[in-house]
Image 1 (cartoon, rainbow, N blue to C red):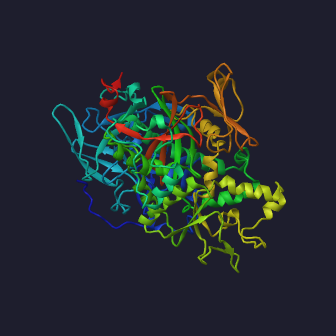
Image 2: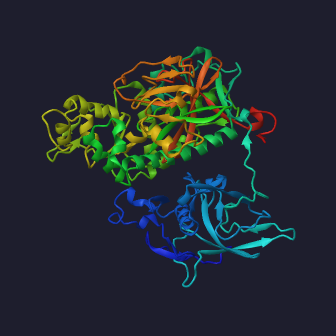
Image 3: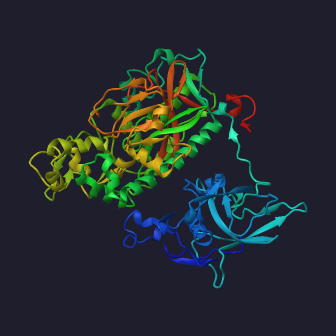
Length: 637
């Protein structure tokens, strides 16, 4: 056990100890953070010498800051602390040079050493995140560490370490460290060394485990008999939209489903968490310099409002969807739909009910946790009042809104659905109320922000002076419009205005420039390069939905596919071509959902075309054991 008894937590930002090298550790008791001292999201970002350390005052931030101050190197951005165990290099900042890292499991013959990173896995005390500390002293019977975001209490006077943890050694030299936190698992230690003896071998998974496999249920069940409960509003709306109890409309696929391995799902989960962190980091980078906003084609008069939305640290995302290609060639992300993502009900409810009805017991449902994770996201959303669900007059949005409303209700949030802007009216003080007189202060929308912005563009015809003078509190004689609601400063909108940035395809070249060769990213640029020509490329409008206005060219400059749409007047980006898996005559795209920024579930969409669109079908996705998908060894040298 740790030698320390529990001591009271200090206020957020209080120095709780001074580690070797005179590096302060701070309390991360977020409940006591002062909004006046830390008014913006940017205020929570920690930098030294313009080098990003992390989010104040988390364990990862301290570990990176201690290494930078004492050793001059930093490790890469990671989604969770436990992901550090997978890193293989650190960057010597002054020389922009990489140094080797090696990871050693608890019990290794390579002992921990001062300055190495002690890593706990996700789960238990460190659910989802894991934990990292710096080792400062090693003996055969104990080691001492320094850390943040554990306990938040002051270290005893005169002590330059946070905890002492019991250790033991075996006669043949294995070094074991007590986990010390009950239900938390200590992975081991990460050392900057080129000595790989006894280090973890990070081997590549068998490529066969990344294949998507098509299977079919038997004929014992009738796929056309009713299986959705139309007494539930969301299921009734879904049945009305689909004109039947159907997961998809293709008669040839009523018994088909797709499988991915447990290894593939673990990679999808890891990629989702890491990419959310990277897209968020890139959003902050774009908003730190207005010149970087120019390629996003957002009316300049709205830039201050986007900055305001980003700076409001309570203005968090609820959910989004990543679009991936997955095959034995690997896993790559196409884009992040974090403004007005769809398919939540198909993934979180319908595919599971389809499997129950059809008697599909193969593996497990890839979306079975999505609903509960959305509930958890809403529980931490800070909504304090009636939440208005604003949707278009669209049957697909009917069931999407009702499915999300169910999660809100379970989270204890009262909500009302507004179709279009029906019944909205101005109040005497410039506010907006619904048809029952309830003030609109909290909004979740199915509309894309770009739709709202088009209302401004249409009204002002790109007259920047008039657009800049537009005020959400103005009360024209006409009834309130969508934009009048969404841009009111006192209205908290989910998803927030800043999600215009990571949802815009213009973020993709930014990501590639910040994280070149990152394993889940595709090369992307604002101009067509020779490198992109040689690989084949995809032209995408910087703003688009449902696969509209996309053109795909192969490495011989031959047009492979092209779609029309309403976004042909927007600028384009160019992204490396990395085709979808083609299975049974259909291209299969994997979507993973985030809830509060973390992986929450998965689904697939399929199409005979190379481009997945709004008309593409959803087919059930199941997760099966590795040995049931690819018999033989799971790993290859």
